[in-house]
Amino acid sequence: MVIAALPDTRAVDLDLLREVAGSVSDPEIPVLTLADLGILRQVELGSGVLDGAVVVTLTPTYTGCPATAVIAADVTAALQAVGVDRVQVRTALSPAWTTDWISDDGRRKLLEYGIAPPGRCQPASGGRRPIGLTLSVRCPRCGSTSTREVSRFGSTPCKSHWTCLSCLEPFDSFKAI
Image (tube, rainbow, N blue to C red; front, side, top):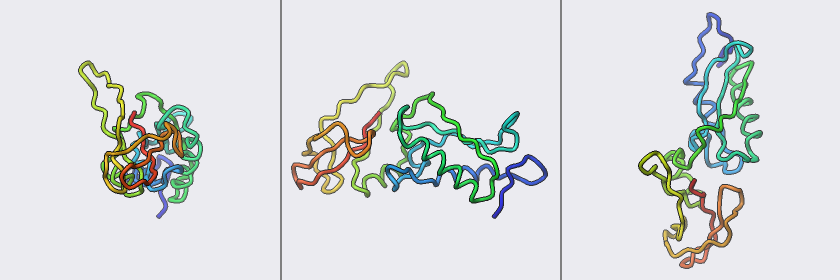
């Protein structure tokens, strides 16, 4: 299927393009898609100097995320594979990404992959978010809460390394922010 990126008489299906961009896998946690992570903010047709381009706006999981450039290249390649000629990927840092944006399906996939998903951070009154203190994380293998943090830094900056005191298995936990 070829999708035109030019604003002429051919229709551009932005919902389909959003689905294509959202289906791109995260390079650090390949079981998750950009839609699962909630980092895909917008897919639209550009205007002005970007006239005729498909503009994709992403919010990285954190400002210094090393995967941002790879994700942008993967989104561009996925859209070009369905016939989009010009793609512009933008980064939006505000509002900042939060683990609350991870979909329920994404949380399920993390657990099945062996990574403890983050808890939800609900805003307190006045829109302020509480700073979470994690004393225990449920083991994704046996479900025990008898776990211990080994290192605040896991295999990627967004994860911490834990061990289960019940089944003795090590595991990563996605940090809640």
